[in-house]
Length: 497
Image (cartoon, rainbow, N blue to C red; front, top):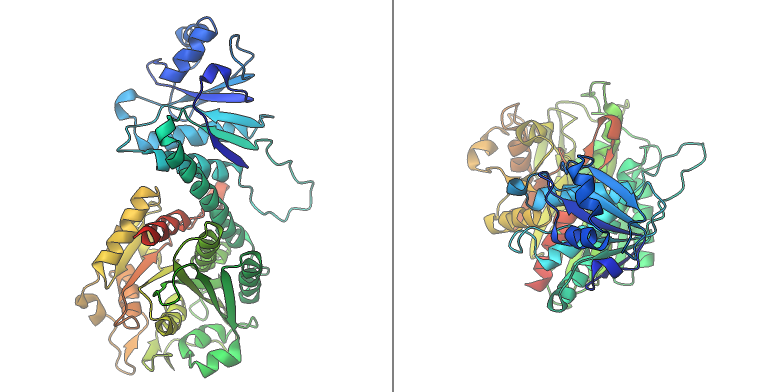
């Protein structure tokens, strides 16, 4: 896919299709008015007949209008002018590009009226066009035996109109947006694979493949003997009920100075989560293949950092296991010792992600990190609290948590803060070990983070619970690629700072 900017008159653009916006009351945007004049009032007549109401998300493809170089014009509804903003613009852009993927259009110019610059500036305009195009073109890596559908013909997208002074910012946005779209595809491809293919060993192979593709990446994979030497008793406890051996994957992007402290991203990589002995209900258990979405997001973020040659040191750590109810599986009431030396009473084997993460977080200390962010589809409680709209954000460093939340706003991949005060730690008390792995039903997303906090003392740490946003179910079941856009924005801003 090629992305470029455009600045000349829309009527002379040599592309297969131009995309213009129409508001709900029939108001033509500036670029649409130019097309209307060039075509002898064709658009005004069409709107007067009521053939296109301009409702948000609706599109209409017109062919062979006179006075234009482009062969087609796609009208995209912008909704009501009074409520027009960043989200409606994104929805209209998404609908338009998705409509073009169902045609033979090979090149298109996006000419949708933008919200004010304080809502969508030049850089984020370019980035959004590229990201939304990548998302529209993404196809699930299905394993159906029938003939595969042909990929969309769309191969070139121009964003504009762009004044000369803005061209550099838009082009930079297009480059970053394209890289984010490709990274999101990495996460989505991994998430969509079934658990019998995407195993801990497979994740390790994909990390090695990324390191082969990018010179800035190096990889180290710790197998079971090394995990025992590291005394990762919590991670190994989760894995012991499975025939799939666990892995700890360490992927490093060395883009900053040799002495520069890295940002460390830690991902939960439970490639299938049956719940273990605390078995999950059968309904929708197939979606537990997505329980490695945090790990997939970490690999995606490292691929992004390498692709854009980010001038920042970034370390990705993935704890990869499968959680199964074998005769050797850990049992409720078992007590295990973490890599930190702290003991944990496992009251529920379905609270396994925090057991994997706690040893991975402790391992992160050796990098003397500037910041640590873990990502995990950790709790159903977070979905109850925030639905499928926001990731939950918690941590021991309010500035770092705020960085992530602000990055999510800029990236249209939002997170929301949850409290993490000492009262929640009290819920983890155990009569038999240093603490338990669950704290009861109340505040479940927060007590899970409180558990992780016990392994992050002395580090600047934040936790993103992505259980509600990493995938969607139903007819459109599949990985969403979130929170890769948030992570990319966070890393870009860190690199600039």
